[in-house]
Image 1 (cartoon, helix red, strand yellow):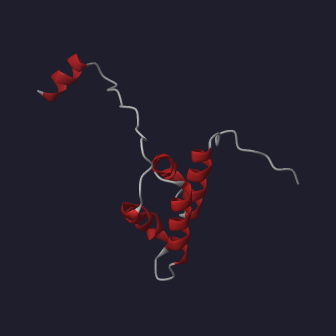
Image 2 (cartoon, helix red, strand yellow):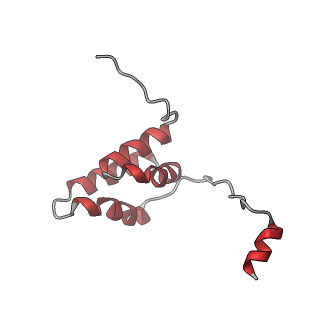
Length: 99
């Protein structure tokens, strides 16, 4: 059997986000996991995911919520910043909507 790579997973963060979203059974929240994959160290995220999966008293549908809540105790990577999002509408139209 030959391994076929997924062309959508083109960076280390994408692979980590894919692994985490599959572990927590939340494939539709890939973007959220990608965001935290860029903010936190991979070893810390994988260790936290293992701890969450080992909890026997935690329902399967609450794994993702518990995982994101437990992120508060982790240290972020230094110097990681996101691009600012641009408004899709021009300011002149936004002013008219607010009034």
